[in-house]
Length: 331
Image (cartoon, rainbow, N blue to C red; front, side):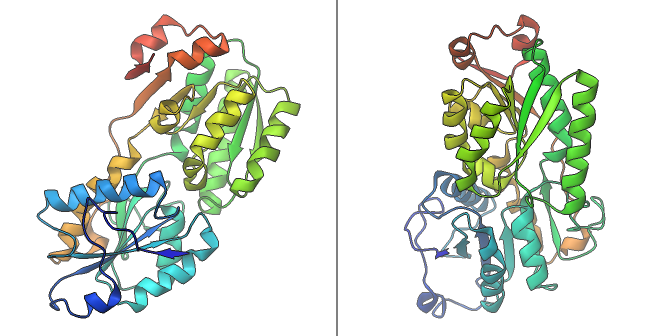
């Protein structure tokens, strides 16, 4: 696990160790920020940069009128409970938990400190909130509807590749709560049945499992690859894209970041920007609002990204009707 120790993590702001925090005026609010990856990773830096941008938009400057304490799990999600407890002991005014898995750990560590989650999968299914309209506890934030969009992603993949019959799906057990994971699996399998494809679920418990997972996918002679939503798989997107390319597998993922690295297709909301938008909740809570009364925000815009260069490399001809609906085509 790593504490915040690198300058400029949040939009160029300085890092403030605990000794300095003790010298700050008492009225300056402290925000804990719990992330999955390492502080140095591109994913974490992008999230914190977006969060810093959001802070500035609401008039906050880290190190001046707000202090941000970052804790990073280095992709070891089993560290979340200890890191969450550490933030609670610091008596921060609010904790930003980067995703559903982090939120569950913070939820178990405190029932009083407000929690804002920028990227939730199924907040109700995971037991994070009572309902989207009335969260009812100390948690609120945004949902990217990732699990609910799995059938849509599979349908788009089939539309791009009408002849496929075998689709492998990488999934991360424990990425979300049991109910959410079961719903995601059941909906994906029902969609596959409707589309006339066989869906082969391949579990990835940790980054070290990826080579084995792709060996399984290759042995199954899959025609394409579907990536289920998961913070860990998102953090491993460069490796996943490279392994898919090595195996000549067109992949469908949940974020444009996969396609920008050379992946075939993606469909979903801009989850990196959610870290900027979540500051609206942070601002309201710091001004006295209760998370229980702040409805969870659902995305209204979903973008379809297609990497035409990758398609050509794979020898795939994408239907013109699908290309015309793409929000961005990378050539």
